Image (cartoon, rainbow, N blue to C red; front, side, top):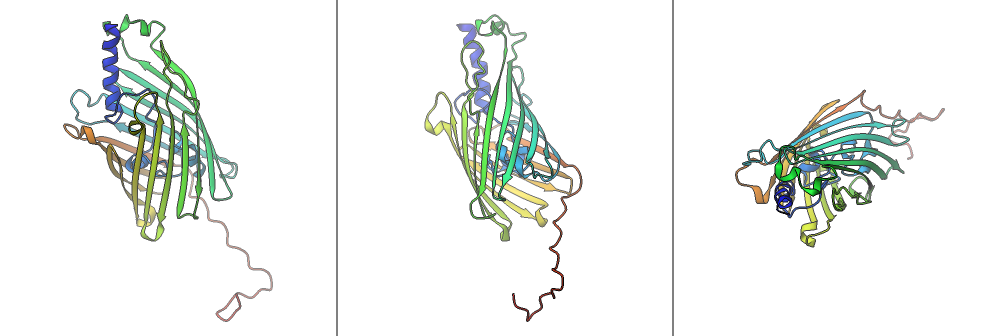
Length: 336
């Protein structure tokens, strides 16, 4: 038992740091997400409607209008003693619209999270999403979760019965998401459910990945170039209070230069975030900075960088409606 406790102390320490200073929880509770979502308090409606939403909200994949690739890297708690350089997360996704989006869109992605010397998590996923009636989008993601405890060279852990059957475990999981325009493009509502089947990734005993349910609203004030989001996440963990399982969040985005430049702010009960992005025709960059309330000392926060590349030219606009033959164009005195 003492050996197991020593291993547990190390794992709990990593979980506390990765868990936004909350009590330790199970694995795979940090879905790979783009820098846009991180900068706006983790909102599922914050990111662009593209492949970057693969693991956060599958319905966002339906927004693809041309093939694209997205890459992001997170560096957690830069400068924190005994942690800097030891916690990192990467994410890559490729999205493809099928028949120019008329048959939906497909995205594949890979996420990688490492607590160096402790734990290595990998996520592989495939998502399909489609848009119906110009106002409703829905999508699903099938993913494979795999994690490995890194105990090589640790005599306290290598002989522990917990790892007698191996140090790694994998399982399949499923996500689903929907979003709809409630008041045209002004108000959008979204709902995402992650880890629907609560897969078991335990080694010696059961360790189920918590189901997560996240709802969101987005208000778009286009005339001001502003977008506001409000989210509520409930994580169905095996232990903890309602307060510890619930994460409300707010986000704000300001658009400039005809949509090319964006500035973002976000907040939850435990975190403050900000960032921005710039998008050219094919290449775009996003950045997010996250500061955790209970870890504000001795570190420079979490930094997230995202890169997007869009293949092909911009989607062509639909041709103007043809004038009926023998019909004179409407003039100032013509009837409507």
